[in-house]
Amino acid sequence: MRRRTTLMYCTRIAATIVPAAVALTFIISGISGAVTTSGNPTTAAGRQAMSGPAPPLRVAVIGDFGTGGKIQSEVAQRMCRWRKSHPFDLVITTGDNIYPDGSARYFDTNFFQPYKCLLDDDVSFRATLGNHDVVTDNGRPELDEPAFGLPHRNYVFRTSGVRFVMVDSNVIKRDWLRRATRTRNGDLWTVVAFHHPVFSPGEHGSTSGFRPWMPRLFRERGVDVVFNGHDHLYAVSKPIGRVRYVVTGGGGAGLYSCHDEWFSAVCRERHHFSYVRAGAEQLRVKAVPKRGKPFHTFTTKGVAGR
Image 1 (cartoon, rainbow, N blue to C red):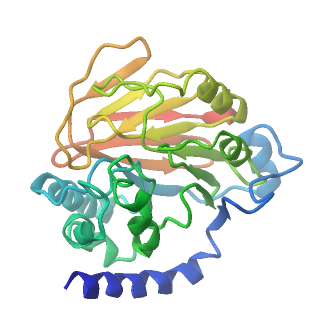
Image 2 (cartoon, rainbow, N blue to C red):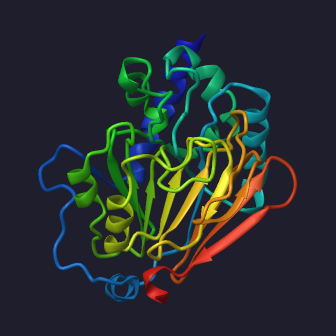
């Protein structure tokens, strides 16, 4: 049964990838020069002037979700209800997509069934790999399943003026990350997503070895927002080098506790997903719980407003 279900979704999603290529440009790791660029404007205002305004992009972000349990299902159902009045056709993940070990035998119960209401409406997923995802064959089952939208472990895609840099933080490739965060003409915003947090007030805390080089790189490249997971909570940093760091790990796994940290602007121990609206002049993030109103919202004007 699982095999038939997986094949059904693979066929349908594969059929949608070709027309989507008009809107999405993948920049794949492993191709020499694929993430290089030249002559970039250094501000979002300059990039916009050259390319014209892009339509607003709306995207959901989830992390630490693939349990197959009741809470994951409740968050997934809220995403579908929310989408009726707050449309989105793209979900990015901050990893731990399939508990406990990333094995394909859990795909139906922990992914296809909970998100059926999204997948049936042709919502696309673009995932990153968490520590649980790589237990089985170093993440190969998820890489081989088209529904997760993982063309490689590290990849870049661009849509509606937003540059998404999707990183496998289980093994950080510094040289690739430096190339991938260089903007191109038309990039109004740069969003980076990976599993292990740069700044987190949760139980795992900030990841050893990521600082200070990673925040320095993101500041220099004009990154706007970094989405991480691993800690099962919602947290937003103060602007650090003009960059916001968000931990959005409340997609379904058991919650972790918040702790006081100098860099923390807000921390909530709540299951949720994040909803992002990226327009021409500002990027807004809302934390949406499984029930009730959004419990936190912040905006950034990015480099254009600095």
